[in-house]
Amino acid sequence: QKEVEQDPGPLSVPEGAIVSLNCTYSNSAFQYFMWYRQYSRKGPELLMYTYSSGNKEDGRFTAQVDKSSKYISLFIRDSQPSDSATYLCAMSVQGAQKLVFGQGTRLTINP
Amino acid sequence: GAVVSQHPSWVICKSGTSVKIECRSLDFQATTMFWYRQFPKQSLMLMATSNEGSKATYEQGVEKDKFLINHASLTLSTLTVTSAHPEDSSFYICSARDDARAFTGELFFGEGSRLTVL
Image 1 (cartoon, rainbow over the protein chains, first blue to last red):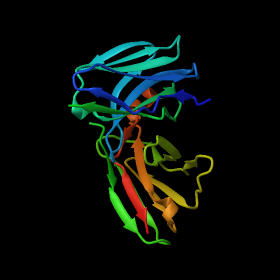
Image 2: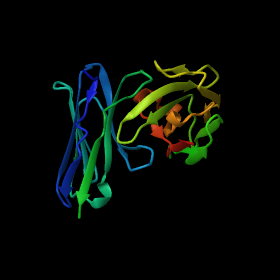
Image 3: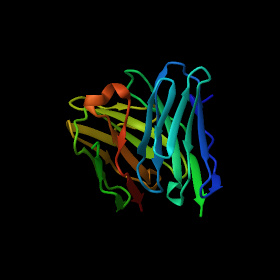
Image 4: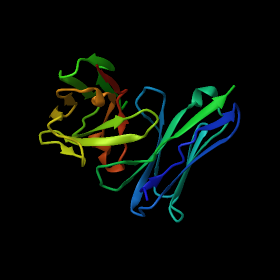
């Protein structure tokens, strides 16, 4: 079993839809949770960062962490074609050096 | 802030030659940088952890004599692919951890370097 599981998709939705992306994990020691967005042939870009459980909102993006279920989510409201990218979840243990990444979900927003 | 510059973004070389890729943190200090490899439609594979002033730590299965890493300063790490072969063709991405926010685990990535070995 992988430490972080993420459905690779692909996921295709119409413009304006609400998108839900998810990851599950097995290591209860993870404390820091991140979402990265990666456009084709580019490096990942940090999108959202959350510590421990709870919600965080930034514009059209909302990140949720449920540590009791070992489940994190990223919601995109009013999705735009420019949101089409691969979204990677990542997490780390406090003080640890390495980030553990999910496989990434390929998302396409259709105009 | 938190910009990581990676160069070159694209390189083609002949089999048997060596290629150097640079990774620079432009507006922060990074004692620790990471080098990843990414195959098409796959996630990031950590190759090695680069620490300023000390030897890099390589992940299992990564040949340290093949992928030479030098972290000469708090803002620069280099990856040299030695005696490159076609199977080394890939997308290489570096990332850096801001020393001022190291406890958070956040990583900032370069734009990546696409290596094609003929």
